[in-house]
Length: 325
Length: 258
Image 1 (cartoon, rainbow over the protein chains, first blue to last red):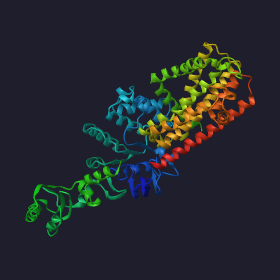
Image 2 (spheres, chains in turn brown, purple):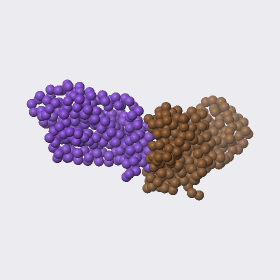
Image 3 (cartoon, rainbow over the protein chains, first blue to last red):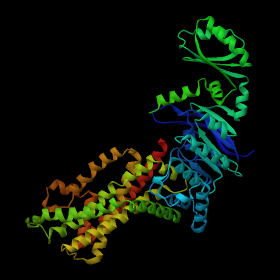
Image 4 (cartoon, each protein chain N blue to C red):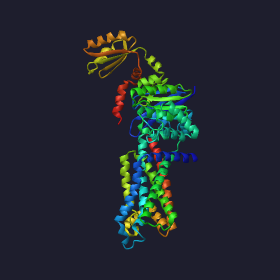
């Protein structure tokens, strides 16, 4: 019933660029882990910056923990913990000093502060490194320290902006365990942004898929996948389809639907994948189109993304890469 | 208010700690005044023989100049670590906490001020060793250091604000280089203003660095012109207020752009 985060109609345009946020709206129920999933450049980080009072929207409104992010920014800041992209630790200070300063700006003092810092250092496996300068920390240690710092004042809403980007696979797995553990804590609401499909799938209980600054689909990961009904068929052609042959070859088949072609890759959906495959292969062969590989899979979030954003996740990432920097 | 003061102190501690862990900085702090006061002072020792030059030794004349210049240069580069903090996301992190923006600026100002006091004391000791005499005693010297601190505080705040606007080390270096040396030479730091070309002394009247140098010299070394010292102190205080306002505005502009 009560939502920890409400974003409604957020619009943000950076100078001389396209809209980063285009009427972005979503709401996050208290005590849940909410995932904002989208490719780089979809506007996830912009949304987090606005919700954490770092930046302001051109229009639209948002509230966090029941407070307006503009008119009650100070109340919002006291209620949230933020893990921003990359590592934001003070590298010239030790782990403990980083935690201490973070606590001090929230008004924690003396023994209470020391106890809380020690508790978090212990919990995030940093007790032995507490007295070491953060410059010497590994990527995973730095990230754990940032999360510990975000929790020092016991926030009710935690923002994790791309918490595992740039981490090694093993370290990422550790981080997932850590986040799952946080999620089980009573009352803590977590908003997580990610461009890793499996991360959203694993961690988020609710999901909003963001593309070009708007929410294109919302629901539980399972629900979103179930909505697709049927299997996903992926066909890799030997050559790119130059003149629309593929479309023509498959349009007529009623075993499959939602056909889309990107270069040499072909995606389609079928109620019964195993039965549809030979039909598809026959149709392609009849048009003289050579097939390099074919696969059938239960729907993944990738398929969900394709369905709602009209392009594959990889393609969207590549496009973002091309237009940014 | 008290919370902002306390936060300013926490930020100051952070910066001082970082400095303390860089022994190179301490060495530079010691070496710079030695070069200016002893080498430069020796080089132009006979300047005092120019007809019309008032007062005793050139080293004595040079003390307020070197003291203020050292403070000014140190503060001028105050924006560099700010850019580092911006790049590393440290400032973004603080901006999502309840800490007041003014406390972030004040932390750098107070750290800079402490640095200026330490450097100034080194300069004074050096000057005493080579025979300088401060005719107005400890009070005059303290007032001179205070003026240098005021100038440094205002300069730190400017540098901080500029850093938030430009966000590139190269740009900040270019801008500061454009500012620091010219302002030093368009002042009475190294030469009595009654002996320099008229246009320089006119510009010097509007040069904050010169306010601190001339007022400091008057306070520590001469028959003090209290009206002059008071007016220049007021100018520097006003400059500091404007600079802090500017840095706070720069935060707004920065946050609008991200």
